[in-house]
Image (cartoon, rainbow, N blue to C red):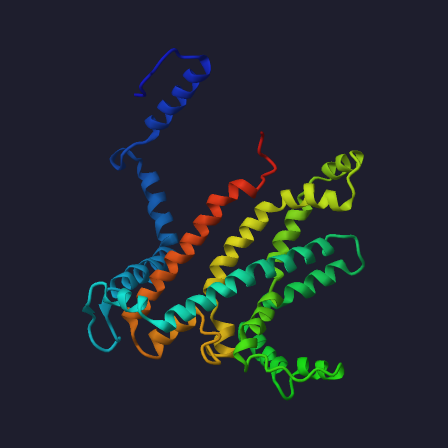
Length: 326
């Protein structure tokens, strides 16, 4: 069944026997026993709700949006095919480029900042300190708080007249800052909110830190490495898989940031926080330009896919896996 090339060693002969056994076990449906058929049908019935949900709410919307991206569709009237008109109009849309710039700005400054804070907190909370479990829970709470609730809290914190941040700044003689009311301050203010929700990445980093073998630290101490060298040459390299994972998840999530922005600023002031998904949502549900919005969605998907692919391609240069042998 399997072609033999060259002399067969005992190991290779064993491998060929295993392959032949696997092929022999692959029987057609007509050769299956009634009991095996019943088990398969029962299994499919048990997972059928999930399969139906996957087809209706994931697979179908994906292909439907691809189709609508080549049409002019306003929900009320049937879609009209327009070819690549939506994509051509997007390339000429100044607001699209503004939203793309805002989103890329947020990705460039938001992801490194959030991951740096999360990693620093993980390192601190990995030390033997009092109330360590309590502090871990406190820093993870922002991840559990509903977005709407946290957005209203931050709106009060950013308020020019009665906000807590400006109230604290007043004690040191600093004039009130129009946090989300000024185009120059709007994106930095949202970055502050983004940094606040770093508990998820912190937990991943904490797990990676606890997985670093203590024997490596002992060996580094014997070689005369100080704390900084231990961190730079032992801790950080062994945490690079977690950094890669959090970076990929951060790219996917940050490019799609919407809820907190919509509640706090609705894309203002003066398009300063008009992020990509905010503009997509506005076209779909405010202007009812579903075809245009679908084209925007597919462009965003390609951008995210490209960024994730770039991270994977470059990861071989800086990600170290503990099980690798050189």
